[in-house]
Amino acid sequence: MGYRGGMPDFAERFLHIDMDAFFVEVERQKDPGLVGLPVVVGGLGRRGVVASASYEARAAGVHSAMPIGEARRLCPHARFVPPDLTSYSEVSHQVFDVFRGFTPLVEGLSVDEAFMDISGLRLHHSSPAAAGEELRLRVRQEVGLPASVGISAIKFISKLASDAAKPDGLLVVDAGKELEFLHPMPVRRLWGVGEATRASLEALAVVTIGDLATVPERVLVSRLGPSLAHHLSQLANGIDKREIEPGGGAKSISVEETYSEDLRSGEAIERALLRLCDRLSSRMRRSGYAGHTVNLKVRFGDFETQSRALTLGEPAETTPALWEAAQVLLSRIDRSNRGVRLLGIGASGLAAADQPRQLSLEKQPRHVAADVVEDVRERFGDAAVFPASLMRQEAKERRDE
View 1 (cartoon, one colour):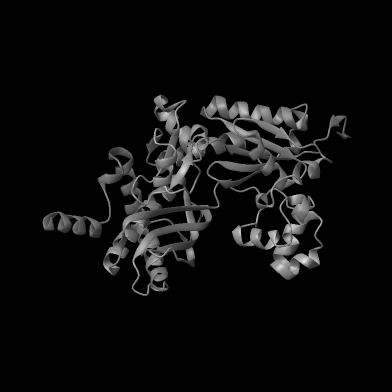
View 2 (cartoon, rainbow, N blue to C red; view 1 turned 120 degrees about the vertical axis):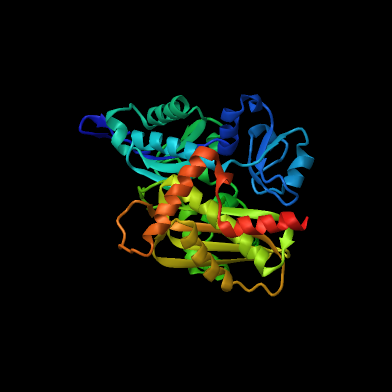
């Protein structure tokens, strides 16, 4: 450890913190009877998927993105809980308040994880490990949730270290020992290595990250192309020049739903998408965000997935604004008369919803109405008010039953 101004210099200045089984732990806060039991959070319908699993459920082979039916087969005695996105968003805000109270140099990756630069904390803590333990203690005391921390002199290695520290632990990879930590790991642990890339690397006898580090970059280029080859070669050799990019929590907010039966009519698809736009609007307004880009995801019954994005003239967070963009994006999807299995709508390029905007007399009533809607929902629940077109359709469906 070096010294600067008479104080120890934190060579391992990158900290990655990841909440442990975040959705599960929030559910356990709400229902302490779930503590110690295998718990699976996810869609409970026939086509639902696992969003989060407790470590007790993971021991039985359950993991995120697994079909819920497979999770039930592997762990039949688990408690299966539907996701409560409103609660997760609220607790995420509490967690990030703790992060930013610890250091202003916070780069949020999702609702439950972030990078930090802790170099400035050398005046307050004796070592990077002491700083990491203090952060974990604050999260536990102020929010009541466990978190794992990884610390390294190299940004992406700090994330790998937090994974290795799970559950509820801390791992510091000492400066100069990064490759000793990194090279035994399977190559799939590197960012950018999906199934297709892994198969290409296995054809070169590359199994571990250490194997990859020995392959000349020119050889990788012939298999992966210049951009990915350079990216992976750099990481495999412990090179990551990125700095912390402070600015908020999640980079995007999205909602999606998998349907028990494929949606086939245009009317059914539009109605389902409008519901999602309304849910997204509610999440965004409660989180205090508006989005410059709206993203649509459509997955068909044959599992083909199409995505479209639209950048707006001004950030949007109201249901009407999101719905207008969603209709444009939906018109760009090639359905080919196929049924729709999943719909997702999201917003990225997030900005504070209260930032100054171009004045528009036409659009002011939308924001006033949206504020009223959220006030009603806060008092009486999410089902208290929703778009009139959905109300009319549901009334018609009840008459037809």
